[in-house]
Length: 116
Image (cartoon, rainbow, N blue to C red; front, side, top):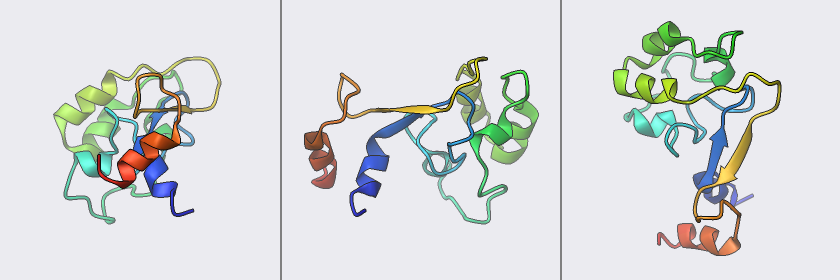
């Protein structure tokens, strides 16, 4: 349980349907979460419990007007627009970001723990 935060730092979500990904708190936009990208983050931000799927239209397209309304940051909206949403029905997936093979190694988690 104590390692959960360390694992979260190295995990990057791959958006497929967006139902498992926290819009603000999971790493899914350029290996970071939106709360860090838009510092300072406040729990009172709009839709603080939102999922990424809340910003995807039925046609596997981003709801750009809603993104602009909630984020109020054109650069982040532009980055999100660049994330292609697959049209096939599958669950979101993730990958390990901290090495070139995208495979999880305990050594890379140790690096995070020691700030390397």
